[in-house]
Structure formats: structure tokens, C-alpha cells
Image (cartoon, rainbow, N blue to C red):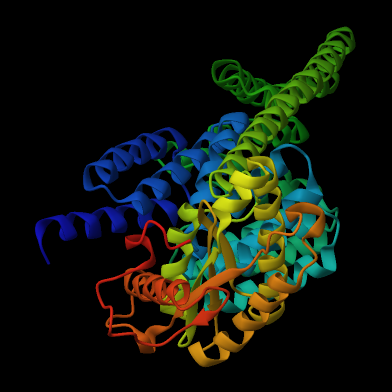
Length: 534
């Protein structure tokens, strides 16, 4: 392995570690992804570049910039789809699922979560096989399909256990407990957190702060406020040790802690916790959490008998609630606009891409398309035949009738070739190579079989009623064809050269005919060598 390959391997490993993180710090992970992209550019490795950009989009979403993440995701998905990279596509759909969750679109969240699982193959990491299925279960729960969600959680739990990913299994159980709690199933949530804590003890693993927050929320519902306070304090302590979390994590923990302390009657402690949560919300622009801080403040005033202050806090809460929903609608509109603009740009690019590969007169594919697709057909099919089709004496049509009539003849011949080819070689294509010359690719057909079909196509063109267009001038074609058996090498250049040489033979043998095989009497002559062979 040379130095460049070694650098690419190290970068691949670093990106995999970043992609497969269960807990993260969004800011530092985003910066790392930017660094990895620069390194990938230096290596000239587009797949590594794309993976680094996907990590950036994921972290942008985690930091709350959903519109920027949505705008970046389309080009990443397009590259992965064009290159058949299921692993990158699967990760892309998982980010997409989370984007729609932020937008409150449970249906689209679920649709992308399904695709994120369906695209998993043997290139996916063990983490992906577990976590993508977990997020599918989360999406099912969000959509209200709790029975289906539970079935997915069970499958994921078994898979995590089979693959020995105990640390990730803790995350699976935490997500299930949170989903059950959010659905109002507190007893089920309690059962899941009991299993989660048992697993942690059995494997000597530490629970992450989010797990303590989930368990604490369940204890509040159980009325066990001292235990809830202890759990929230532990979540805060572990967060401050440097655990990777989203930007809103500590504000959420402090708000939960304040709620537990209010239920305990420890209103001074509750106020201190709530003040810290408020400061974090203001500092980090956490509008959603701040609304709930105002609501908790009103509850805290009421618990202390400060009813005037409670009323004022409720007014603040409702004002903040309205402002939040307005800002969320604006944010959703910006994100959807970004997604629309990116989709529109993608569709426009696809239209331009298709137009660049079409002949404007006949609508057939052109030489660019031929050069892109024919090598693949030659490589994929054991038997493949190419045929060069040229109109006979076409110059007479242009000279004696008009160039407009000549164009109409070309359009009609193109339509006949395309229709007839579809019946005999549906995976093939017809391309206009220029002027009155066309190419037909017939995958799956050997030369003798193709020759029979092409002769029938030749006869169809000759027998067509051209009287309305050609006014008595005959319209016929000559065809030269070739397959790998007639060529020195199995390449596009060799097949086209042999087909062109056979077209030359067809022209000089009287035209309106099909010629195949090897013609060694004129190895250096081709149709293109003869200026007056039309």
C-alpha cells in the first residue's frame, strides 16, 4: 500500500468513526467534518468528500440549522444514487428522516426512515444495521404506530445483542422508553428503563445523560420526586464531564430538574435550576425550550403562592408560545423553500443533462449518450451487436426537394428505427451519430440473429409510404453491423470500426442491404473513407 492509499484508509476510518458516533458534540463534529472534506479533496476521492459533506449536513441539523442541512442533502443523495452507493444513500435518508421530524412531518419522517433501512447492504456498518432500525422504530412511534414500533424495537434489540453492541443497545432501550413515555405508556416505559439499567450493570457500562433524563421523567410520572431529582442531577453532572450531546441537552436537563424540585417543594433550588436553563436558552437561542421554561416559571410561582407573578408568567408563556409557533412556521417555510429550490435545481439539472444527450431534431440519443452507454452494454452482455444505419442517396432529397423535407425524412426514419428496435431489443437504443447516420445497439442478440431483424427493419423503411414527403424519390438505408465475434478486441472502437467497414461494403454492393461478418478484402477501407459513397 502506497502513501496515498494509506492516507485514504486513515481518512475512511476517521469518517466511519464520526458517522457511527452515538453521542456527539455538534460543533466539534462539524469542524472535524470540514477538516476531513479538505483532506478528501487533497486525495481527490469524491466518495470521501461526499461522506464528509453528509456529516456536515447531519451536524447542521443537530445544531438547529435544518434549512442549511436540507439544502446540502440533495447533491449528496444525487451523487450516491448516480454511483449506486447504498451505504451513503442509507445514511442520507436517515438525515432526511430527522429533518422531517424537525419539521413535524411524521409521514415523510417515516418514509425516509423506511428507505434508510431498505438500502442497508453488506457495505453498511454494524452500527448502521442497529441504529437505522432504531430510528425506523422511533419514526413509527412518532406516527402513532406503537405496535409496529415495538416490533421494530424488539428486532433491533435482538440484533444489537447478537452483534455484541451493548453500548448501542442502551441507546435503543433509551429511545424505546422515551417513545413509550411520550405515548403516555408510563408502565411500559418503566419496564424498558428497568431492562436498560440491568444491561448497564451487567456490562459495567455507564448510562449517558439522556438515559438519566428519560428515567427521571418516568419517575416524575410515578410521583417519586426525590429519585427524579437525583437522576436529573446525575444527568447534569455527566453532561458537564464532557459527554457529547446536542446543543439543547443541558438546558433540557436543568428544566427537568427544576420540575422535579418544584414537586419536592424545594422552590429555591427549583428557581436556581430554572434560571440556569433560561440563561442557556437565551445564550443558545433555544426557543422551544425557553417556552417551556416560561411555563415552568408560572407553575413555580403558583407553587409558592405568588399568583400575580404566576399570572404574569403565564402571559409571558403564551406570548412566547405564539412567537415560537410563528418562528417555527417561518423556519419550516424556509426549510421547505430550501428543499423546493434544491429539488427544482436538481430537476432542472436533470433536464439539461437529458437534453445534452438528445439530438434536437429527431429526439433520439446522440453521440455523447452513445459514448456513455455503449461500453456498459458491451461489458454487461455476452452477446451484443451494433449497427450503423445510413440513408442511401440522402443528398438527392436535400438537393431536389429541400432541407426541410430532408429533416422530415430523418425524423420519420428515426421514429421507425426506434419503434422497430424496441420490439426486438428492448434494452437497446438508437442514436443519431450525425447527418443521415444512425447507430443501433442490440444487447442480447448475436450477429446472425441481429442481421435477420435488421434486414426486416431495412425492408420496413423501404416499404414505407414516402410519397407524401419524397414525391417519388426512394428512401432506403444501408446497414453495416458487427459483434464481438467479428472484432479483434471487445471494445466500442473495434465494434464501430468493423460495423463502419461493413457499411462501406453495403454501399458499394448496391445499397439497401445489410452486411455483417469479416471483409478482409478491404481492411483499411471504411464508409467514412469514401466521400461519394452515399
